[in-house]
Amino acid sequence: MSEKIVKFPISFSQHRRNKLGALNVECQVSGRMLSFHEESAILGGGEFITVDVKTMFIEDEEQRKICQLIVTREDLLKALNYVHPKQDVTDD
Image (cartoon, rainbow, N blue to C red; front, side):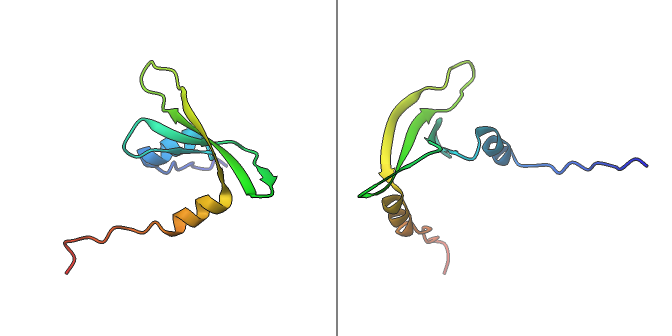
């Protein structure tokens, strides 16, 4: 018995996220991305995470690393707690 396979369409952005992998976060407005290293380091000041800021693959250009950041998980999560959606000024 043959089973029919139904493909579910995915959005372009989901396709790009799948292609980049779980450790990469694409900038939504520029050709840049954050590339997290798979392993972190536990030290007295917290858990240190290495993040590379890279260019995206653009046409024939090679991807390149712009700089490297080392942040703590605690500081990153704390900062994200202060990020909130902008209130829409058209709502009454």
